[in-house]
Image 1 (cartoon, each protein chain N blue to C red):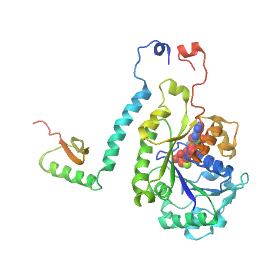
Image 2: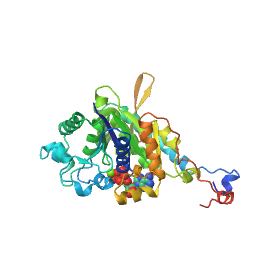
Image 3: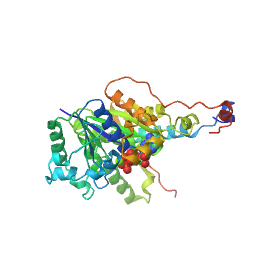
Image 4: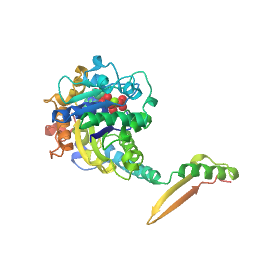
Length: 83
Length: 270
Ligand SMILES: Nc1ncnc2c1ncn2[C@@H]1O[C@H](COP(=O)(O)OP(=O)(O)OP(=O)(O)O)[C@@H](O)[C@H]1O
Ligand SMILES: [Mg+2]
């Protein structure tokens, strides 16, 4: 805690940024882990189907599995290029 | 039946071998017959940290392949009666570690009367690391208060919870978090994740906090597990962690800010 730390004017310190980033990342990675084994392969296949019709990069397709109560929801987001 | 304790982390260089040597020596010192095995095939180092590098004739892989008996390969520690070391091979690669082979050696160690089998895992999530954690009853997750180490620890937790023998049989490996290279000053400055932060993120019980310490390098220079340096902060912190592992309750030490003058606090000096 430096001079300004003692008298308020709290800027977000780097440790709390680390914590925030880790919490988001790890919750995401855990969700992917809990998904079924076929998920990565299915992602690849969906990606190649989309690519047959539109020209997109890999990172323009986002596939995730979310838990909503008892059900799993597969969410597919495709960013289509501007025309 | 012996208890298998795997020391693991995912990320390299966080203190697994230092911790394996200390924990094995601590368990043996507490009166338990203990063996510590180096799973880092191809890159053995536990022998150096334990100070037995000149006594290695046969290694873990030799026992798996039947080139040597377990008795020929086990190195008895000269300081602690209850402690033995099984070195890793320097020449073979990690494919020499087969599940059947590892299980056979662990079984023989248990039959010989060892109570604790401490497995020093290599870094990464490949064969050597997964073999080291496959048969674990307990896992000690060594984590530095730093983003990549915490993330890798979480990946290892995922593997423990899905791929270990216990998990596959519907059970659970007991998980313990060991935070190492901790610097309370930097935590206070908001420059380093606190032990509570790491614990929150990983959701694993804390078994100990080992401070960043000069004693660790000194111990490795001389080939003495740092826990045997009873004067040192790191040695005492490992001693506490082993006691907690054995069920004792001890307060965390070396986790609070060293006393500093008001002026240096105000102006952020060290
Ligand atoms: N508490 C500590 N304080 C200071 N230095 C430490 C501490 N713990 C470990 N180190 C140092 O960090 C380095 C790596 O330690 P160690 O070999 O135990 O890590 P490791 O996880 O086994 O590495 P690898 O992944 O390569 O097997 C060593 O130089 C060691 O002396
Ligand atoms: Mg190591």
